[in-house]
Length: 351
Ligand SMILES: Cc1cc2nc3c(=O)[nH]c(=O)nc-3n(C[C@H](O)[C@H](O)[C@H](O)COP(=O)(O)OP(=O)(O)OC[C@H]3O[C@@H](n4cnc5c(N)ncnc54)[C@H](O)[C@@H]3O)c2cc1C
Ligand SMILES: *[C@@H]1O[C@H](CO)[C@@H](O)[C@H](O)[C@H]1NC(C)=O
Ligand SMILES: *[C@@H]1O[C@H](CO)[C@@H](O)[C@H](O)[C@H]1NC(C)=O
Image 1 (cartoon, protein in one colour):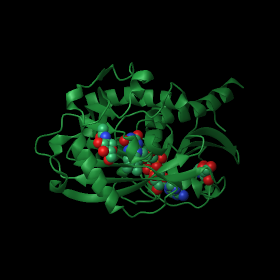
Image 2 (tube, rainbow, N blue to C red; image 1 turned 30 degrees about the horizontal axis):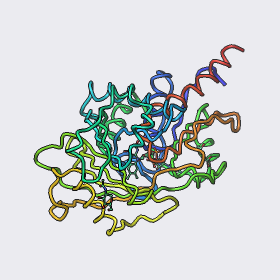
Image 3 (cartoon, rainbow, N blue to C red; image 1 turned 180 degrees about the vertical axis):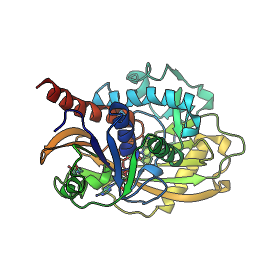
């Protein structure tokens, strides 16, 4: 194997695959890079391509500054840059308010205050009745559809090739690209089924949102709310997507639910909760619903997997399983995946 890869293949064209291709191009400017996937930006599947269905915002779920938190921190910094230089990417800075029904966040301060440039308590009189506290901070809103196609355009300009193909076994992929030295596995939920090294710890976490007509007066912030009496897997979020992306209301997390159908009773609960949270939306019955959406987050027992494996004298670098954090961790995970490849290259160079 040559010390520096001359050909790299990325399997998967969700946010994980596209970001990994981007990092690959930056670190290996002259390598031939191909993104291969069953679904590419512009196409949709409720069960096999989750990236278009995300909210999406940056709101780290990590409770402490662990490896996954580091991924989120890297992505936040990158979004600062992308939003400032290229707002047409679909990534825009927008304040976020997180509303709590307990004082948990006061007792255990969030690890990312410094990352987001400070966190302030929201004025109590602006919170929904019964809320205990709210936190205001800077964050990002991502128009997922615009952002995926922007990433693809950047890659095309950087001479990255795209191919639409589906694989049932990783060895078929390896034999289709005999000259490639490195393969990135960014198959998301598909990692569970792909033959070769099937990962049984991968499972779906169903999400559901409503796409609502955009208010004429743009919302000043996004909102997220937790309420213990809604149960553990329901919450509320109001996400105004930039660049004409409409308004996304949610949300829910249903583990091991593979179904593609929206739950219309849940949709009603979401409307009620979001209108109470963001009164500027008006009455729930007056909302103009453009579509009901379902997406399956690629969850994994033990957390996302960024790992290098050797298979048939090739390097296989896994980067999948981010569950509900695929955007906010994307740049950190992709950087880690490329670090793993670079380590191998450097080790070879030292021989
Ligand atoms: C309602 C909802 C809200 C969300 N909100 C947020 C949010 O606010 N912030 C955030 O960070 N994340 C959010 N997420 C999570 C985010 O959507 C995912 O973490 C992320 O999109 C995962 O990206 P991925 O590239 O790993 O997977 P995917 O987008 O599913 O891409 C998988 C790719 O692999 C390809 N593939 C798989 N198997 C094969 C095969 N065998 N052969 C060929 N190709 C294959 C597919 O065709 C596809 O191109 C949300 C998710 C949902 C459902
Ligand atoms: C939490 O949910 C319950 C039940 O829907 C509701 O009565 C209560 O007002 C909610 N609290 C907040 C702060 O929204
Ligand atoms: C991706 O990972 C999954 C789970 O380990 C495996 O089934 C699949 O073969 C891998 N694909 C590639 C291209 O490495």
